[in-house]
Image (tube, rainbow, N blue to C red):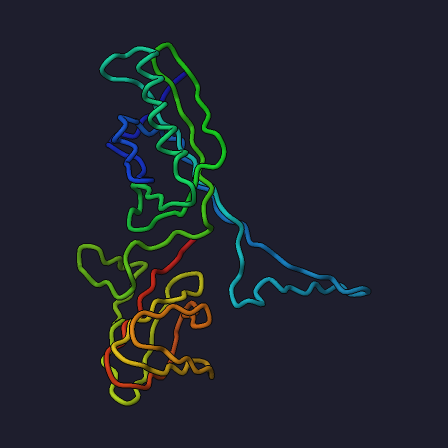
Length: 244
């Protein structure tokens, strides 16, 4: 059997550890799954048309995705089967101890993370004193940006997927605001205000109290979002875009 290793130190960060913390070598057989659209369709009697109700909530819904990687296991100090078993004992307990979905950072495009959990049992292929451990994470459909929108630091700014925009505003009386959500999904932002304010968006009025507010009703749809903000003080709108 030929093992194809990544040429550089590479792996994933999950549940407080990077895979290299356990001396794991990632193999070149990673499988990044993509989410399927969840369709709700009805075909009326005596009609060739199909009615699609998939986005009545405003967003197209998606099923979960999977992320799978294999790692070469060996105890580099002992180089024995006992040593290898001790390594996989640490690794499996690290992976399986997360009780819910946790951020999963792939070293590729590391400014985005999956939200995943190891649900199914890992598989182990044993050799004399080493082995291959394959792990599959069950993940939320979208990758989430690790950087909030409005981030424009040169070293982290992504000219393909980011946009330079203000997300913190001084409100004096009434201000018109335009925000761009470059994500695939609508965002439910966190609103930080220094006083009570009113936001009018898409014909709806939202009363925002002093402090931090997060409402499932107030959303930033993909694309352009125009709104009017009334009040006096500072308003910060904080969200993280989501991409497939």
